[in-house]
Length: 128
Image (cartoon, rainbow, N blue to C red; front, side):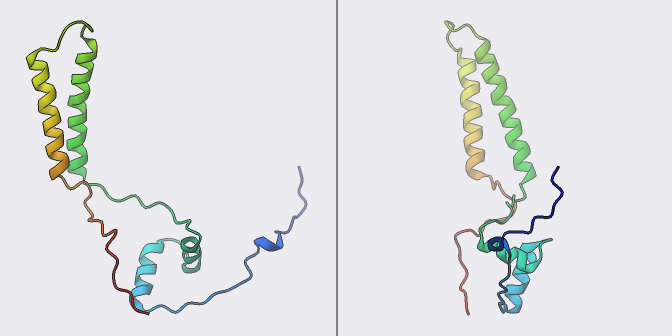
C-alpha cells in the first residue's frame, strides 16, 4: 500500500478567486438555492453545470389516485393474460377496459400532478 504523499497536480489547484456583487434579492435567491453548500461552492457548481438534482414535491393525492388506477389496470391485464388465446373478450371485459382507460385519461387531463407550480420557461426581467 502506497502511503507516500502525492501533491495535487498544478492544473487542478484552484488558485484564482473571483468576486461578484449581488443585490438583496439575488443574495436571497442564492441562499435559498444553495441549501447546505457554501456560496462559492454553489456558484462554481452552477458554472460547471454540476448542481444536484432537485426532485419536486409531489401531489400525494394524485400519486395515490394513479396508484389505484394502475392497480385496477394490472388486474385487468392479469385477467386478460389468463384467458385462452383463442377465446374472445366478452362485452363485460371490453367495458371494464374502456372504463379504466377513460378514467385514466380524464384524470391525466384534469389533475395537477405537482403541488408546486412550475415557473420554468417564464423568465423574469433581469436588471444589472
